[in-house]
View 1 (cartoon, helix red, strand yellow):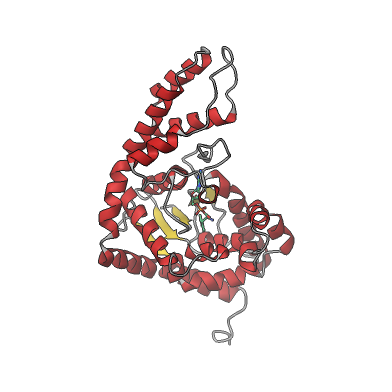
View 2 (view 1 turned 120 degrees about the horizontal axis):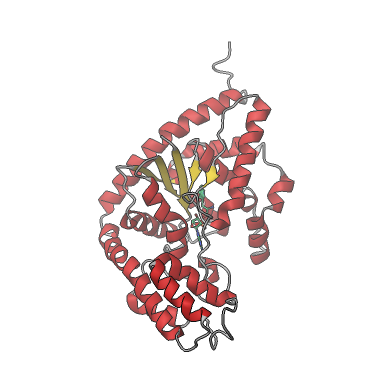
Length: 333
Ligand code: TYM
């Protein structure tokens, strides 16, 4: 059985980017693999979240995981900070992570630019913690969105470097996974790059149908195509990218055809369709979130059992790595 690991930071509610970039694949992959899906609360600390708010966000993401169909009977579902072995392996792997490569990481440079007053060491070594999450369970596959690709590349480097240094074939080479297809990037509706919490352009799984209609209505458009078979500008391509994940191929082909014939005045109809199809996907999830969120005993039980299972494999890896690195005084003769 292949091993799958992935996580999401508890920085707010989950949005369509998280859902189509990651969660949809978590749910498919739990059927046939040994899966570990967690809430990356340590990773969220880089931006100093309000300590009163953080547990609420953990609970939200956990409820949203379960409402989307993650099944604790099939996958190990846990909170990262419930597995202290991850922190120790992170310390050990940090000894093999070099300043130059960490400073060059795109996500680090972006965050440092956005927040020049908070360029902390945790932010710098963020990819090492992520590599630890993955390597500690010996993952084969990591279902993530396009923005995480470089972190996966770094994870493979750390694995190879460790193996070389200690002369072992110990860590595997995990790959970012989307069922053989390109990794996904869900764009925002404001014409700007990706949908993201810090971009403030998200459609959340918890949004009401009215909110979704309003957000889609406000999406950036123009006066329509300027001729037959012209290329779409980015902000129109973005609408089609979302349409492709929420609608049927026939619907996409219908609007593609309208664009290609150069017709105008159909954006209103496209937006109505887009909103309807998003609502069709998110409404049943939104309804389940509320009832799950109110079941504290269940949420506590899921995370307690998940942590116990995750600690078994994590503990084994940590013991083996300690030994390989020479932290073996008590077992040495
Ligand atoms: P995070 O919390 O930023 O995002 C969680 C997941 O959602 C995907 N995602 C998107 N996919 C497509 N389009 C978008 N607009 C979009 N926005 C977010 C992300 O690619 C990700 O899969 N570092 C990770 C969390 C993490 C992790 C790990 C992931 C920590 N340890 C180990 C995998 C394995 C992060 O910040 O994701």
